[in-house]
Image (tube, rainbow, N blue to C red; front, side, top):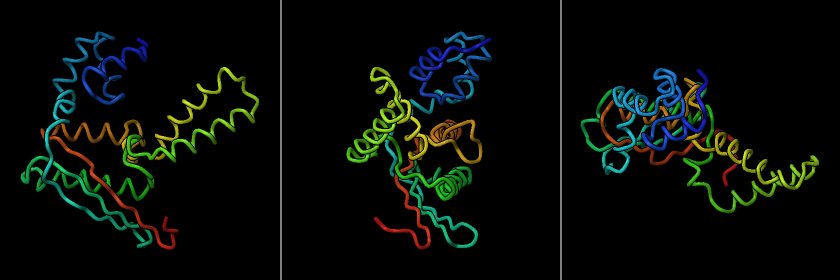
Length: 200
């Protein structure tokens, strides 16, 4: 059966699970929201959202140097306990995030971290492009909104398709890891270096 986007949206709002997880849960349960919530709970995915408010004071900083030593990444990922920080699966997650950053070159952590000036500039460019292409005035704002979504997906780490599994976003991968390890996990900050790259 075809799953309606409004059902996915509702399930996401109620569980905090990723889009693909919601889609799978709804497909598995024939579009029944309550059963889909139960399905996600059983898989531990819905728990991840509830952990998001818990404090994170432990974690690790990991470095990744791409073969050829032309690109390097430093990333800090926090968790709640030193026990999880030393966990192999947590360390593997941090390493994967560093590799993703090396490959996909995100400019921001999340859409909330995009500064106002960049947002304003991007919207102006997209609006000009829409006007130039002869789009009617009444649809221009909708076009800009759609293209901004694409901008966030391309430039914000959490919204980028995860490089090792493009069916899910980095945020989906993060939530899956939270569910598996049973602690809140936060990607705190990152820096990507490339030989000869201009410094802002």
